Length: 109
Image (cartoon, rainbow, N blue to C red; front, side, top):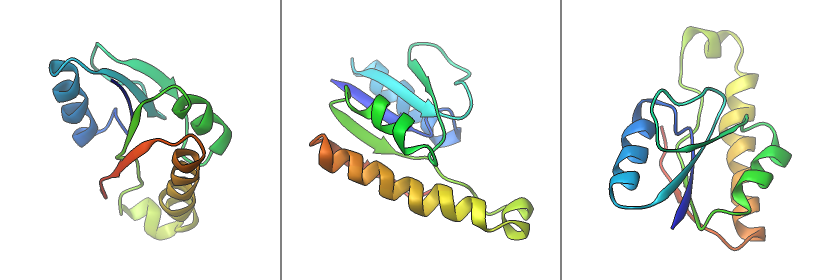
């Protein structure tokens, strides 16, 4: 099964990806940063880019949504960015899952 992991290059995402690979799944990581580990297909993208997200999700069998902006001092000073990533990015992802009839799992980070 091919599984798309949003935020797969992050702390939690890395362990999810490694576990899925160990179980024989193909993993595609959709993230703004390249994963620091091997064995995945990297699809560079930002959750605010619905078109890029839709291009990567079309071939996946399932989706695990781990991407998000964490509450740091930068997000307190500029709350628009995490709102766009966390709320609108998630909405774009769920719309794509519905359009392409994909199973999705949301894990709030």
